[in-house]
Image (cartoon, rainbow, N blue to C red):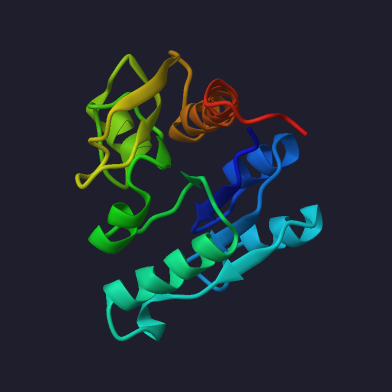
Length: 184
């Protein structure tokens, strides 16, 4: 069975690009009209949509517009790949059990928007990457797969972050294959 995949991103889109190079992506959605991920989508020939929360009367209206896009494209699975909005009740209810997220820390360690920086500042010997199902909490959903990333003696925050991002790109592809997505 082919799964129709949508990827959500807010910024650079490096995880989106890695996914789109390996798997058929129905569309990219960004919540920021200036997100670099949109340029990546255009270059890869992937359809994209972008609108911002402040363009709507409420978060419910915003999410209803997203749900309409998902239904139009018959989306089976949503991959959050650097999507920095908390999934609200409307979207979660419509797609519960069909939204996965990648987080740049070894959950439950360092949830939230700054996992890499928080791990670095805590001085941990290892952090990692987690792919998990999205639930009503922040980075609290059932863990699908994780990988540890050591902090090396000569690491800087930038080199540590680069290794975590490299692990993210590899892990997301592994998880998507395990979930039954077929490579291009």
